[in-house]
Length: 102
Image (cartoon, rainbow, N blue to C red; front, top):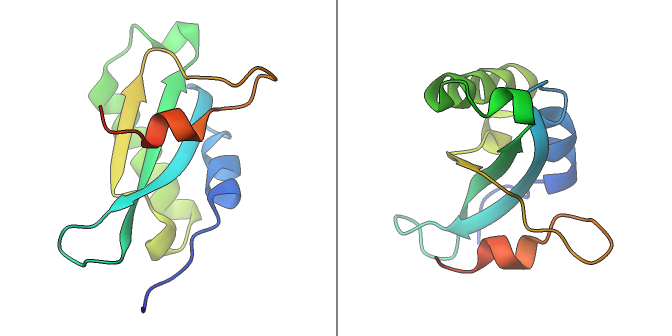
């Protein structure tokens, strides 16, 4: 199939440069408009100081940062802010948990 491969590590490293971000994970979710392809989704947990701020404002800041620093196909189509990031036993973000339908 066509489309670009997105290096999640590269996108995550860029998003981690945003001061409000404590943890982030980039995952692909099925694109219903193009079967066989995926949309880029970023799931983010904020630093404690940012949790009281306006979520929409932070989502916009993340999107602006991504558009300014990434190729168009790498820019997340969906940004989800969560309270607590699931971690593995060794302290890494558990992407398997994030990919499970809620």
